[in-house]
Image (tube, rainbow, N blue to C red):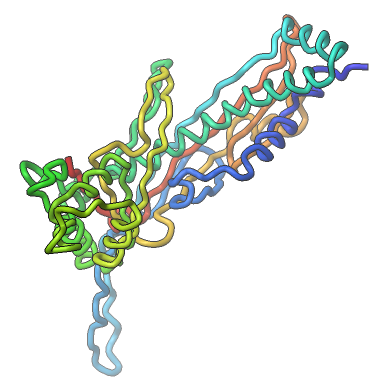
Length: 352
């Protein structure tokens, strides 16, 4: 006897399938820098610290009342997190196809069922794309803009004061641009930018993020080759390994080359981290990826005909049956927004 369709395509089965398939996936870069956290509701607030060098304790006389120090350079950020939701249907015709295949060939039946699970897994992947896109936009200047369909556009500016743009960014022009392989000096640019953060905030910069096109300009740079070998530098054919070891030894910077891409809501392809940008960051987490409580999680996890499962901390997978027509719907939803507590301990370079 064949199982009812809703029993086959339950949220728990979809979530389990996705977790098994993705158990060995390489995480997005942003997932390692902004770990997932959970909170109730839509509102998000955090303390963004403009960290500086430590200030010496003031001297005091005995029996004198202690002077109160002001808490300087701290700004509370409050905002409402965006909501994302999308669904897929298994229609009556799909169910008839499942019945027909199950009766004729169990292997084809399992393959067809797997394709259904794969389709639903794409909704979960889409939820992960939204959070990664926001995290990378934060690393590119602190401004987030997502959503282009249905008239809903979410915009967030974590640098409303303009302090980050004024103190933590560098835009190269003319022959300083890294595309000028003969005249530019990328090592000097990296060294000076790194030192700016370390001198101003007392934070050790340890990593540079860029894509392969930006990295390719370093491979071809004359000043780097001549510094590596002043006699035969013009003959050196640099490899990725050689250049990474050189930059690590010269500047104490490890380089993360990030080339992952995605499609936006209308199908246009983008890079998470576009060419021409370099972001310098310290060790450790830079903030968090905050997930709120979706309506599905809040109201349907108990006492309803819907089946709800949570994956990746805050992505809700919901399945339920429609009576007329008889369809099974899968809904994936999330409320998500990253925080950037250590924003001022990073530095953005626009190198071409």
